[in-house]
Image 1 (cartoon, rainbow, N blue to C red):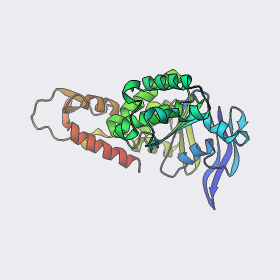
Image 2: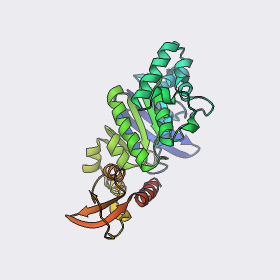
Image 3: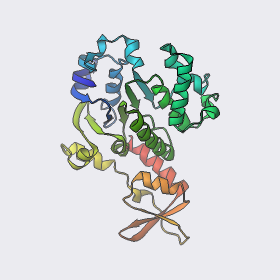
Image 4: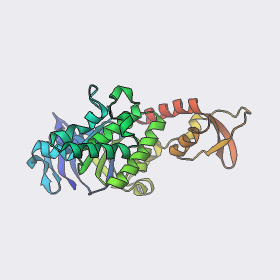
Length: 308
């Protein structure tokens, strides 16, 4: 579907991407991850010609991207940014309709597509279609950003850290929704993140970068259990969320729910969404407790620090 053939990118003497060879398969969810400055976003932007290559070739469906008409190329690639970038003066319906209108779809087809996508994202059409972006929460705006990128039914979806600016609860919910949407639409997705937990949750395969080079490409299981070298092993290990760093001592109050110290962040957040306070269990013993407000604040700090 998308093939990198000895692709390099230089900025002056600095080589940001170094002779990269790899392939994104049709219909797969591939995550690009690595330390800050490793070249993730540069690789993403080269795919839709926002950044020109220095050497090498990128192919989409066997055709050089340089041989595509630029509008033809970009209309077939949805693009979702962290900044969302909805047009503030346009309604939600008008925002979603932009690319289908440029492609001169019939109005009836555009309306059906908008209703279909808003339902897919769990947003009632009648309730939200005439609202402006400022009237929506951050999570709702990001949902609109995702479905706007899908509006013209592109084959490829590029996503550049789309959830990293959201609070932990909204982030987990949008990850879950993206998984649900992908099961239905089966697009080819390339997703940039700095968060290994997000990568492990979403990806069919993960491409780990370091200083502009591909270090390892593999399934989440392969990345975690069969790291290619010490860098991969340390990168995964150092980003595992450590619940013990945010627990408080038990203070004697009655607590109705529990989580395990090695539970996933997703499960912890789901339990905290229902209970104000939870106990943390390790080896069948209570080792501390979490208060919802404090936990949200501390989890957000940890996620931010992981991002560098």
